[in-house]
Length: 301
Ligand SMILES: NC(=O)c1ccc[n+]([C@@H]2O[C@H](COP(=O)([O-])OP(=O)(O)OC[C@H]3O[C@@H](n4cnc5c(N)ncnc54)[C@H](OP(=O)(O)O)[C@@H]3O)[C@@H](O)[C@H]2O)c1
Image: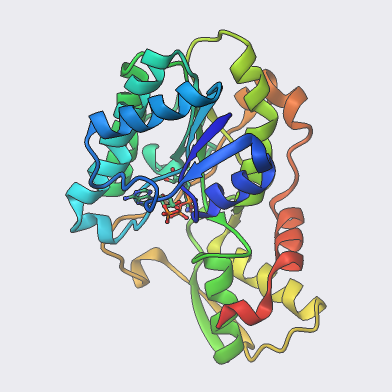
């Protein structure tokens, strides 16, 4: 049995689909990670491990409200730092490996080169700092942990940039979108697929803990991503009002949390170590088409 922490999150939902009855998923209804004690977490996981052979824990739970984290510091620290450490300790004691997700925000985000796992770490903002501290807490727990650093996650469901753009593009003729932040939009479904492909290897081989960047091919700005979203929507004959998407600088769109301008992830380490399992990473625009094909347009509200 595989335990997924997170249930209705973007990545969690796609993991649940990928694993079917091989996994059990706990959302906050099953275990509120913001309120439980470590003993409660330990007892619940041990209970599962005593009734079924627990082979892997995947932590897809996180506090992901990047701007709200600036004022809800404790909530962010709890989910993003304390919980990964506790999960690690419980997993270590049960000898169960862990897969955990982190973010490109741990890097400095400076320059224009794609950032590798060895690039300088300089998280700006509470979310980013608590995610980096969470990586460290998990690694220090002594659990065998695979940490996948991902970026710009979106999905056909949930709250994300793609869905926000489609809703705005349906209602407004002009939009302004940031054009100086560059990254690779990554479908949650692809992250789940990659996870399911590397997981058997991670469960089987006794490798030391490892951090891997994982992103599709290609880079784009949020502005370019928005334009591609509208281009695909038009190809699909979806009625849109939007006529102009104006590129703006990050400085013209102030947010409580600072965003890195450079979110490019260098994925050569993943290609070298697990490329055979992943296959060729697709271009981000390929997954955008797939995700938009799976979108229920009436769910945009
Ligand atoms: N979204 C992005 O753009 C992005 C970018 C880079 C990295 N990441 C990382 O990728 C991973 C997955 O992100 P995502 O986009 O799937 O996040 P998401 O959609 O915000 O989902 C977060 C998950 O955390 C769970 N959770 C939050 N508070 C909880 C609590 N108190 N108790 C139990 N569960 C709780 C939620 O549980 P429920 O199921 O009960 O709601 C949900 O399943 C995270 O580690 C995130 O930091 C995300």
